[in-house]
Image (cartoon, rainbow, N blue to C red; front, side, top):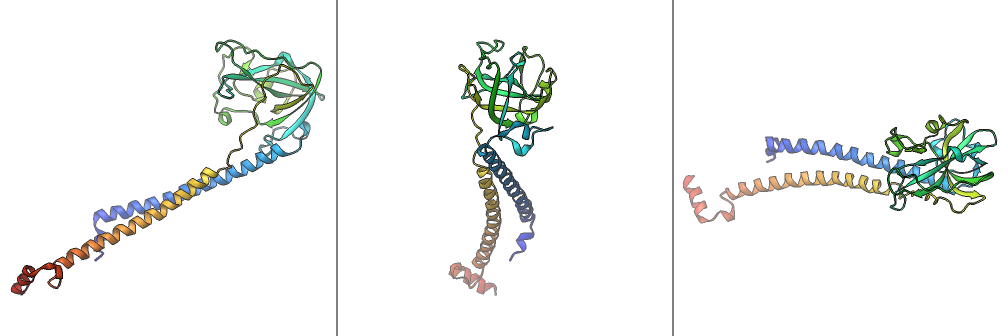
Length: 271
């Protein structure tokens, strides 16, 4: 009855199913892995945003750790407005604009890049943005500690030939090459400043932590459900084929009630 399973058509179907099942297993496991990774990242970022502020010096060593992203820090010093920069291609709320970077020189002679916020773009691509000046004298800033940007992490391709005072990436190592002091790694995204200034750049919104990979979890479950669909469909096709064969064989049997009188007479005569 089941010899049809060895025909070329059915062998091809078996191969397809046996290839599809491990592929679905792999895709499901990959989505579950992404879910765990994004959930861990979401919990870490949320914890850092909610943690009490700490002095920048306690975290700013040779390199900012991945686990310290978005940690709230404080720093005191004076702004160096002469070495301020504008970061191109930074839309906010659907508007084209720039981030405003100003080094904050600390008490130990080092400096940290402070992203003071966002300003709208000029009338043309080459028009310098209108940037409110930083306050003079001693200031205390509070902000989110960020890792230096790279092409890989930001998705922005760096290129030369920009107008003076403009950059595409907030990268402390690259920016520090043109400064007379040493920069600490990373940068601070300003959330509060004392004394405050008016006018001032618009604050950068708090990062959207998102659902923590919930969509990846749903996709993982979906891929594994497809495994059941593939196996169930495979079994269903086999049972249907076997039922059709039994039906055809039964229709040709002399004992089959559905065969009719003529068929039975022919069967007896032939006997």
